[in-house]
Length: 376
Image (cartoon, rainbow, N blue to C red; front, side, top):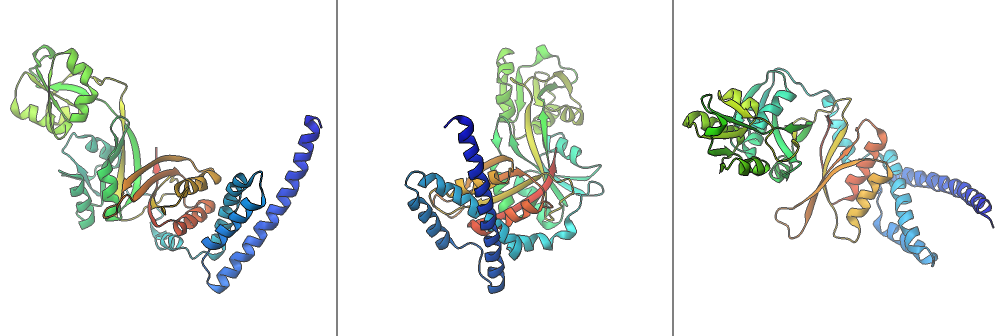
């Protein structure tokens, strides 16, 4: 057979496969209707295992590959059945928050952020909100407590940096408080050398800042033979320079911090590489979901089974959903058991996304919806 003849045969087989798969999907829907009438769960692990073992056994040449294919077919069938049955706890959760499917308010709100005036979280807050009533707190936990108590409507926190990685404490706090992410933005962070207005660059002997900022500017610090001194926050360092009034000391901080504490910018963009980017989120007790929401955050845990995580991730691939982040964190009070934090592009108003999440929530050990929000 030549190539064209082989391809023609493949086309014929594909047409037959399509007809048979459509017939199988119709049967899957009939099963879903039966399960609905008789109050039977969608996922039957024992039945699924029997089918997959049978498929692998019947095909000596391609058993493992066909098993993988049938896992996908059965996953699609379960999503179809979930649409029919429609009693997933997750679907009910979304029904209960329909009144919050609106844009996050940006005016006349109280906002908590970690640090002090001039800190990067302060800069991010100005991007998210218009003239908010601001409250500053020492720790991330304090920000969560403020939102929990109602002292603040929203909290602004960093969750990820291109050089420092994820801020794991914030993810842990999100789970323990069961809050929602309602907005997010990635911001370029510029490091500047700032000192008293009477100081000149030639006067500077010490440079004060957060340890991460000092690391990101290490080449500049070495080139100018400066002594680095660590502080809890870039803005705290700027404030300390203002209070100490030492001509030989400078802070690595933002221009906002320099303005807040009446410092002069001696040099700009002194980081070793291009501007680092930090991702900030807005947290809330209410799950605001705007019409243009384009990002969904989840947290889940899977069984200790071979390929369990791979099967979950393959479900995203089946629907063409773009994963933008996945990270594991150890579960508290559990030996070598992990939670997976995951972000992907999507909107809950899309029925296929909703059906998928309902299916996923039914098939993992732990499932937490952390928000559907807009991110630039």
